[in-house]
Image 1 (cartoon, rainbow, N blue to C red):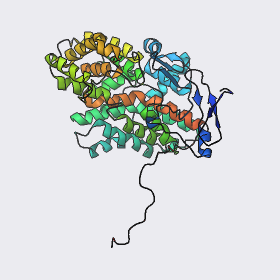
Image 2 (image 1 turned 120 degrees about the vertical axis):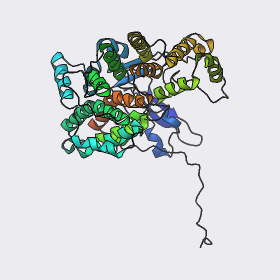
Image 3 (image 1 turned 180 degrees about the vertical axis):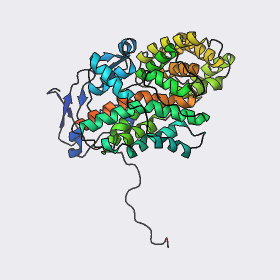
Image 4 (image 1 turned 135 degrees about the horizontal axis):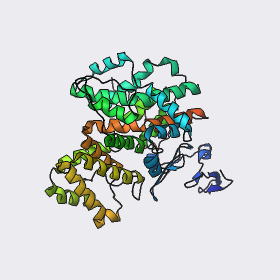
Length: 427
């Protein structure tokens, strides 16, 4: 915070002084709260220039390709940490000690089971229902089962709900997948790590032993970690806005899942695979490249460029390395869609048009390739994104609820009809 101020001069009006605040990193912020008392408010479609909150969780510098969680670079976390430890960092603000990490992992492990009655919810959905539709409903319904932790003003209740959500998301995600293919649900195992458990519940079956490939488990863990939080994106802002009404955490996370479902947000990696299938063959790549360059075509290459990052997405660097490791391990060099993806990647990194416009492959491009190689259908991609993003959503919700906050109430620029009378002759 600083004593600096900006002065807004409006013709025919007295100047309005607006305080300027400084964060620990990033641009200064002009507090426009005084405008309303003077008969004005700001117009900012998409909130591209508006800070709706103060936060200590995640910092992004899109121009420099920087992503920090509580000050730690995402590259270092991906290399040296793991997903559950990153969850702890996001929730509590500091890396855990060895004892705290062991205790937190044990706590997560003890909450991976879901109430048996929840399994009956799935029977109410068609087998071909999109897994995100199922997740929206089932996550919201958790509030009907865990009445003992719904007091949002109780820090212990908030922490318990956070642990339950992080722990149960893999179980429910795997159940959504199993239901879609008509296989029995697999119970979580306490001897497996978080990522190993997810793969076991996804691909194991009661008829034979399933051994989790450690390279695939590490890749899965990185996918979760790299999606854990991304500042005030659409779904996180939705969680905060929903939470500002006093809604319970399960309802707030369900709202976040609904926002994430959109193809411009969490559905981007699913859209990548759909695009690769549309291309169909390497021989058609030049045709689609030319369409992408034609601004009048309405076509754009999914998985390239990013609204925030004007440089290379730092998560994509780690995800590219992980993709190479997974493809080498599984020997999927002859998969036609993966061959198309590798060719597109090469073009994007070398073609002057893409380089000049900084349309680099982003995290969604590489995560889609990895998930396909592992054997996860594209309909599950956004579910996995939601799973990974859960600690970020919860951390932002908890941060907001822990301090003074106001119910979210965006303003509008009204351009509809002025006052008019209802006609008398409409009998």
